[in-house]
Amino acid sequence: MVSREHKRAALHEKLQLLRSITNSHAVNKTTIIVDASKYIEELKQKVERLNQDISAAQTSNDQNALPMQVAVETLEKGFLINVFSEKSCPGLLVSLLEAFEELGLNILEARVSCTDSFRLQAVGGENEEQSESIDAQVVKQAVLQAIKNWSEGTDQQE
Image 1 (cartoon, helix red, strand yellow):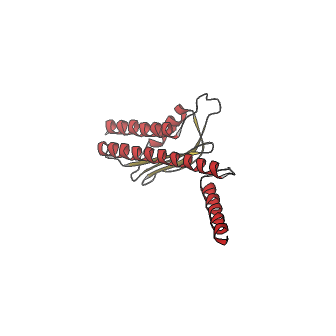
Image 2: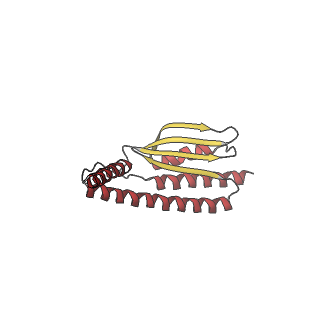
Image 3: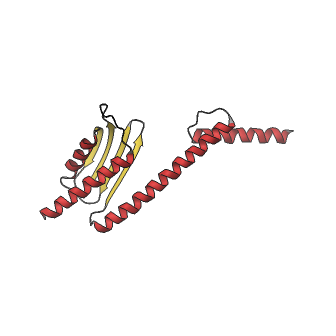
């Protein structure tokens, strides 16, 4: 009997751990497992998107001599946007801000360094008046397009 109670307690502990990891508010075992399954699917989708982003970044880096790192994460209300380049990028900040404006994204907080390298970390929130919601992938594509447009513009000036 002790063994059965021990197994039951261990299972309960593991379910509670699974519940906390997946941010589930479920109480029964079945719902916790269903929530965990959904969480795993979401993680698989994120991995797939990241792999696509990596291959797209490698393709654009092959075509572009300026290596640039771009990451966009979804926050509770908005996005965390990170852009980094080892080289200074005069004018890039303006291009990025214009892209955010075109998306209807309000920059709520930002840290920027443009001295020897370029680094932007910004928290953007969707405009309240905007009817359509946007996702992280749309924001990332807009950032990448702004970088591409900026890069083409600087190539023409040289």
